[in-house]
Image 1 (cartoon, one colour):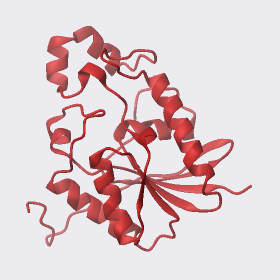
Image 2: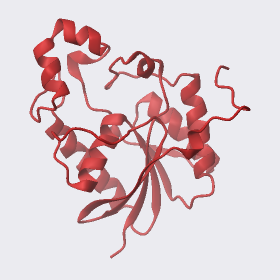
Image 3: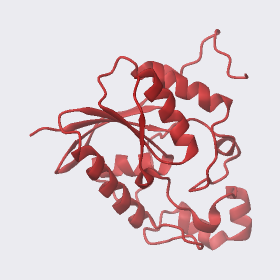
Image 4: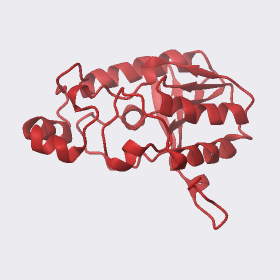
Length: 213
């Protein structure tokens, strides 16, 4: 059976990542370090045989994907199904603020209650898993026998890991989902499997690097 190889990445860093402020569907751009990470990821993937580059339609992911696509002389294909989990009323707030304002809801979030959704249109983990599984099936089915890049968000990458390993949505996360690290998966109509996770060798800084500009 033909399979689709997937190179999945979380977007580069944003100022809100630094501040530990929840972004969700809010459209926050990369910060200077995020642009540096995107450029490093692009260099790391420049020699890969890639058929298409897909991205969430949120700016931080699209900016990261654009750096990769430019290095490959390709265009970015956007898909709203690759967006971060909708955090509802939690969006724009830090964990410290949430723990003071909504301690019970914050506890439900932190303990990964599967059917908990923040007010204001937030998604449950079960809804997120269904959306990501459907989106990946749709995209990967177009590229049987090929390799593609998918640039998305921390919650999306977390769910891809769970789908590939069979872990339930409420299982505590024990794996890294770093900005611009590269994760490798295989897709068949039967589902996802894990090939490699959290390759960050391209993100090691040297004395010649300067991310302050």
